[in-house]
Length: 245
Image 1 (cartoon, rainbow, N blue to C red):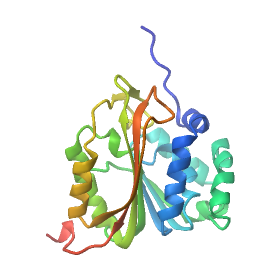
Image 2: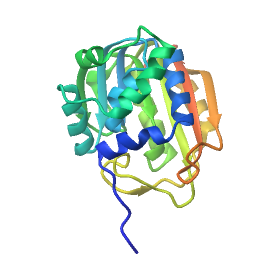
Image 3: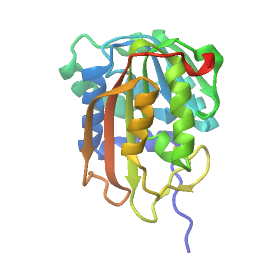
Image 4: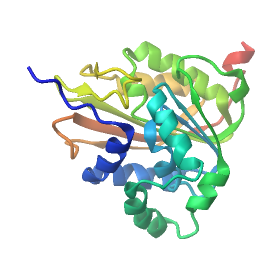
């Protein structure tokens, strides 16, 4: 059996524009609900600068990832390297949605760091720091819904009151093996079903109130994913935060 081609971050980003329907829905969800400001992207992979342009503004941009090649790629771009062609492909859509959105220069200026970290581990330095948090496929790569809940409990601690959480999760096609770009450096199977309804109920308990959801099925990558669950939540804390209990 031949070894499947393993894409580098550069190859992944350049090929990203091949899938357009689902990604356009994600970009529009960000543009519609993000308040802008301090932005944290959990499990950002190499896509941090591309998704950043869909926010109405970005004053601070932080990414978290576990794959050194992703971190190196993002740091190189943000340090003055060329933005990938995919950025320019989707720039037209981002500008059409919001003509006053962040430019390349704005994104580079706002970039703070991309950290080598695991989303299931708490980072006290993030507590109450972010206006908007995104996870675009990251939580769907976690092995169990229990680990997703741990990541969500930390996420609620990181948000400022009235902040927005934008979440994209998928149910993978049977037998699909994820690229290391998203698997933290490993090729990983993510064929399990995610219990979205249970997770939404869990988030409600952490003051994350659903404001819009869009379940895309079938999606435009049927060989990879059966469906995408794209949703936005508003953080309206009504009790002590996780770290205060």
